[in-house]
Image 1 (tube, one colour):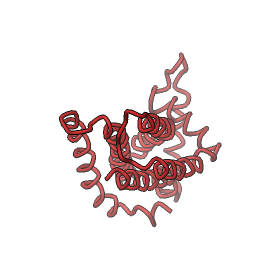
Image 2 (tube, rainbow, N blue to C red):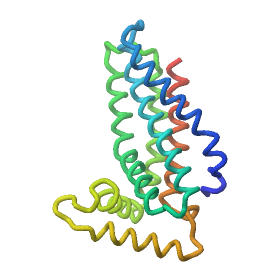
Image 3 (cartoon, helix red, strand yellow):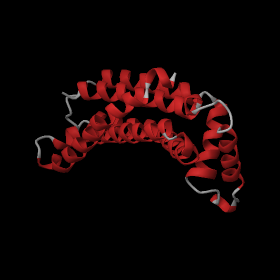
Image 4 (cartoon, rainbow, N blue to C red):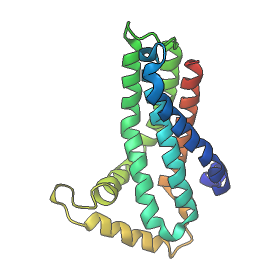
Length: 206
């Protein structure tokens, strides 16, 4: 699936545009307060910034992960951390924007019914990933024991991190490549979901 959707050459070609969008939205947020009706646009701009940040970051990590298999033990936990945080934070960011847009004082011009329909589609795509309970359990272990806390969260030792290192070393001795990684597969699905949602939100804000 990864090979079909995101050949490294396609990823490499997509990253400059993702980086540009990330920078453009950040700069717009900087000058936004001086623009007319900024309070009405701010919730959507903040949400778009977060979507661009996720899109750009995951594309860069995916490219490194797919093209630098020798250092899989470095790139895969970082990619797993980004996926974990996106699954946790993205629904909250969408809900926050929705609450702000629903306020009578927010004159955004955005169609809330269309926003809700787009949000529901995104949540369904996220739910598809979260419903893989074995994956989510493993993702949490990688996040807490390898990527975010280096195995020392709440007094725990290095067991998870060492097990990860050994597992990655054994994978390097098989025919399984990064193209077979469930983390990589779901990262691709998440990037595609984020891109689609961002496009729908941006179109509804014009």
